[in-house]
Length: 138
Image 1 (tube, rainbow, N blue to C red):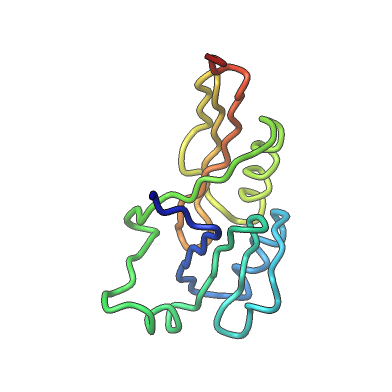
Image 2: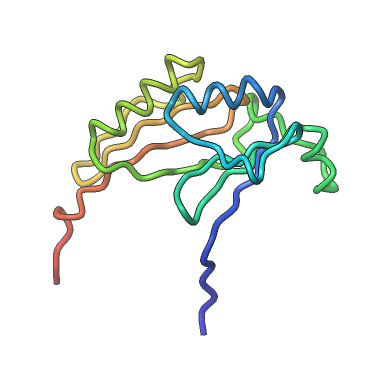
């Protein structure tokens, strides 16, 4: 039987937790206070997915490697779905207005539209709208 997780928890190191919380709040994300404190903030993506934003010193307690500098090297891409092209644009535009950086030009693949940005720590994010009606129902 194939493994399927019921919940996803992504952990990211951040330099300034309060500034990072302000950034994501200004985009429209909420935090779960039950799993947040002076060392971390639980960014809610949906009912089953969270991104735990950890101060670098706290993040270091969970790993045996140095923390990568995401402003200089890609460490991964967190891709989130949007319900429309307009929502993808809205979230990306809010991220840019809040101090994020555009990481790539918008990409329109016909069936999929993607906006990309870097957060304050250089982590890469994508907001993608997929037109499921463009796929064959066969």
